[in-house]
Length: 357
Image 1 (spheres, helix red, strand yellow):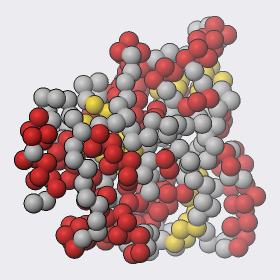
Image 2 (image 1 turned 45 degrees about the vertical axis):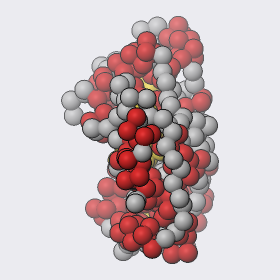
Image 3 (image 1 turned 180 degrees about the horizontal axis):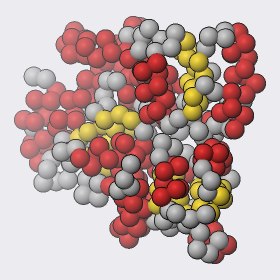
Image 4 (image 1 turned 90 degrees about the horizontal axis):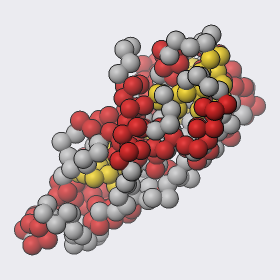
């Protein structure tokens, strides 16, 4: 009997709903002909970026995770920076951090497994307060989110009385609870201008703030945070790639330093970068962002050659298939937020979501 059927027939499986998701029997992770056949269509999605020799290691986890999602009534959310075997083979919803949370709120599921970093799981919990939100590794943090606290925001209010404060969604619930409105890298300019103020505080990413300032007449007061992945890129290394091949198209995220953005052919959020590549289909492209995103886009655009200046996010890479499986088997690690903080943070996120385009 298949694992999923065995669980459903077991006493543990029958008690799962009433006993708040108790631990389930751990699945057999052998690479059997049954596993090979069940995952064959999934390997077709990633064969361009996952070597065949690695698939027998990934496939048993992928099948077990997908089986368990049905048992737990769970959806798996995967950020664009997750590795291809997660992004294309176990995720139900993929995208940037806010997009994931919004789609999760619409999903008919009791459990959300957040394959991303901790602030993303918090955002999912903020928008899905009645659902169980799990993160496979609670130590998956973010240098940008860690650069500011709610107390810092309160000090900023004292220093700049009456000046509205915008928080990038890449922040903790505590920070979101203290600001006027949130933004993404895609809608940051729109959010800033919607406030109708001559001066706006934008936090925590200083490079995103600089980019927004270059796109609007609103005076931007910035914080000192930065993404440890994007700030490592330099204009010199990108110019070296272009000198080696003038046909290359360089696409940068606005969290990059200004000199990097100045070299790029296009600057946009992760979603806009992906859309640009899919629409333009350049022969060769360099995505100036976390390395795994190039692998994920390459899976869908095999005719495009990707140059990879491979800066990896060490926090995103804490999320791996074995941890996702453990999360579903043992229902860990659950993300909890103080209800009062969550309510105030939800207000800031919903103000952004409700902005008219």
